[in-house]
Length: 537
Image (cartoon, one colour):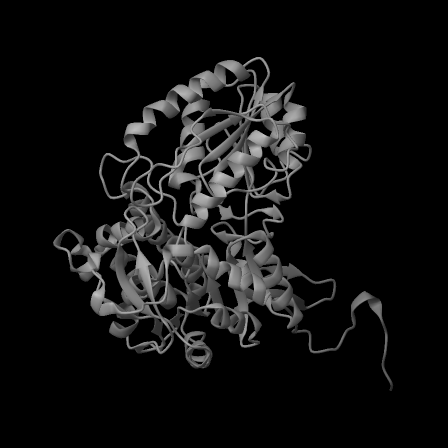
């Protein structure tokens, strides 16, 4: 596991690095047009640990703007000792928090949502700046956190167990859901605010405390978000039921292996997630894994082609291809394949003038996050060409400051080509030609991940096949819409190597609880189940 946690740190590439000398560096936070950073309480050098007070005695890292390569500000990471302190305080805070009535906990989460509304504009801009996603996507990410807070407020008054009939007279069986304890959240760079929000809002509402380790290359979002939450806790005279410890491999390893962390919610790669899952299971902890996705969009012969093209455009290129639900494969019926490719390429051409800095209002395609993403993009394209694929559009790294690549369409590869079966976190889509929906479904299901999928069809029989036992094996199974852009009301997550975890809505709240089955005997006499008689006169 240590090797793969180190890999997580390396993935940030030039997205973060240890400072040699802050005196010689110019930071965006000092420039007037980035005044929104100071609105969030950020400074040039920010402590990266919160456990009731702010501190940070670990290495200082720099956060960079992937659109220009310029330094934004710095964060002092935590040490293992500071993590241990945060865990201890989180456990103690939980002992108080679990006694607070659930609707009162919901009221605190409501206040967190309202505080996020106050800071939605600057926080969304920070998400865009630090990740590289365009302005509307940054705002939309913060809105997701707000939405899940609203959802959690209602949940606080209705989540419950059930009353079960007993076979014994004057006996009642109850089911109760109780909090687990301290929940650890390890989030990824592509959704540095919302994924924490999905977990924290539900975990807090169900009576848990939360410890967050944000991605190393988006530390400013972690700090700014925690400041907003911490202010709500301060106003309500609450203990630190939310703590933060930014850090490196050693901090991540310590969090995952600590028995006091009852649940670890991990978002990241399949391989690292597998190692995290094994390590947590080794100590009989609980885990939520939200890992990779090699998501397919199927175009049936009856599909509304215009709508399918629009869905493909956002599905493939939104967040510059760096969502776990990004459309990575488009499987088109052979009758429509050539027409679809021609039309898709025409749409892609219209986007070239709209590639630019993520905070520019005209931009639709921002940069990828780091040099690591650029390198993966180049490697995948070269492998695809070596395997006989044709670059129908794109395929180039743009020569400018920052990490910009052309959105790319590749055709002519077999459905089971190695590069097609490998998730590449970049705006590359492979268009495949299928003879039937049945063949397309089998191709959809043959990859190791099982996160998101979608079909465009006007045939009701094909639609119900798609969502049935013979259909998609993914956790998200859409019809006539994109593979990405899920709402908070449904449970989010996937099957197979995606990890099987569920976050956000529906009954995902149950993952943050332990279930108790309670038999109450109100008969005045002892009676065994199944008619067993065992007594001595």
